[in-house]
Length: 134
Image (cartoon, rainbow, N blue to C red; front, side, top):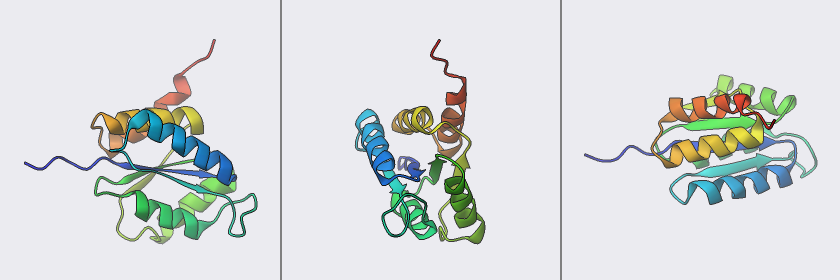
């Protein structure tokens, strides 16, 4: 029996630097078996979001186990929703997690690294809302 592919993770931020840095951190925690792809910044490299970059990142992150997308704020969420609703992710099972970006990304990456499926990875990201610092 062939092992099931790990879900990929896409991090969508208005800032390319934030998305790239968090992706590096999540890959470090999760190991090389989990695909974590950054999709940050606007089309011209400025702050913003880019639907075509988000769609490409979703396709790139998918290894057959689907993709969990975590976004930062405002139009990043709207961009992800538009990509998912318009079918721009072309055949990839992708879901948006309602999660805090940093804590959610780390929880999602760890869960994917230990064999969680797309539902478990999304749930882990969303449960990160409950992690208190005090």
